Image (cartoon, rainbow, N blue to C red; front, side):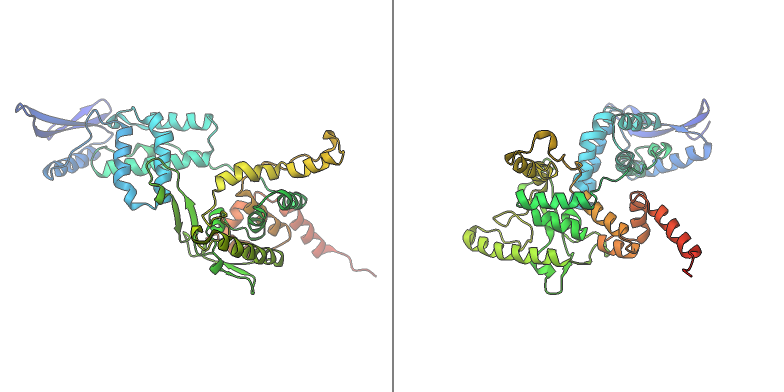
Length: 401
């Protein structure tokens, strides 16, 4: 077939003259995988334009791993530091070990499908694998725009369906036990109390400043979030990051229960004394929840060293042992939840006490009510049962004679 387009099997290939090598030998670039003549012609026009502009296409030696690293270097400045680090981690830990050795020009849907299957078999959630595909698709799409690849093969791969997992939350009695244990044995009691009584995100709590509180009115204003980046190659001074909330809905005012207001007043008085003791060595970021010297908290360390110990009720168990209670009679530990599940526990309790979804959405800072309902309607058992019972009673109850 003329004009550098040839029939091969069920599809077409495109051959483009591409200058000469150092020895004066004419070079050609071959592109395959076009199911129709129209797609072959379109790609040929794109490659001729790229050649005239002095562009280049992927060499036969460029691997997926090498390309992903190159793409990330150029793409990172367009991302937030948190997103950029998440992309780097996904590429370094997951995509490159599995797909990195494959030649970029040989990347097709089959190895990507194998990647999805292997990750799910290894226990990764559907949400995590979908995120991996999002990162890979974004990178490969740039390769298509640059003429390095014919098409984005990620689009040919079926993404795993989202799966709703039962949410791990503490019920009322478990929350009382948790808070009693935290008050007994943890210096982070007020942090846990704030998480349970406000539903604020971990980063929002760590970024909360005294100037964001109006204790007289009993409200907190969410104005910034704290992130701690742990990626390789990030300078130490750049690993602590304060940034504005992602959305306008996340920038919100949260009403505080009286018990939390009183605990925060006490905490503020304690910090005033500590700040004086440290003097010029105090790192004054104005944070409500911070280390003794004012620096931001390391939540990873708190969870590992304190939060899990509180969940295990170790203080209560040790106290009861000293009082002669036998090991068999000691209370068992609480469910091993994540710190973020304190937020879920807050929302679940609000729904269980009959709060309107709009109220829950505003407290949590979700963008829409439907998002709140999508998350929690699967996680609050008995909501439909209770609604059905109340409707039946309301419509068909008998009036006493």
